[in-house]
Image (cartoon, rainbow, N blue to C red):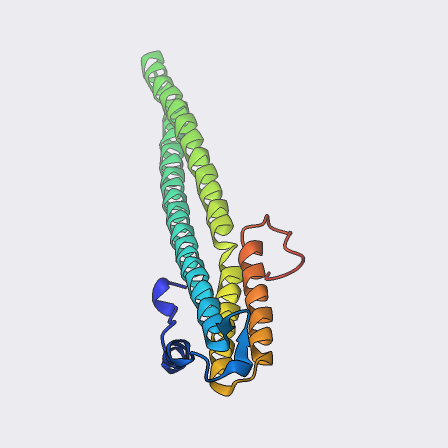
Length: 210
């Protein structure tokens, strides 16, 4: 979900603007507290358009952040795999050295090979620690990616209901069906609810979304 997916202006929006500018008392039966139906709808849709722009931005941001963490997890996992390969290589050299030690015929040869075996063991220990550290970093980055991605579904649902609310409100002006503004209000409340629930801890949100 990105900002480019949120489109406010359309034929019905121009109709709302026209009604808001041209309705100066010719439709007195649609006045409420000094505002015409079109003016109320214009304010309503403007507020929702602003909220929709913020929701759209947040949706794009969460996806980008999740992708960055996922890439980091893959990189750390690859680095860990390389370290384990290096560990195995050192292990093979250690095994060859141990075989050579068993075949050595002089104390000098045995002592020299024993030093090599000791060095391989020390190197393996350092490589193992580095590989395990990289695996932990990979797991942490993967968890961060999941956490960053978790609000996306609810933000997408919030955006959907906000767009529905804007469309219904615009149709309300075109058809003069005031009850549709109430339906638009319900859709807007649901959309704003999903927006609020998007950033609650996982498992909260009264079952909405995931």
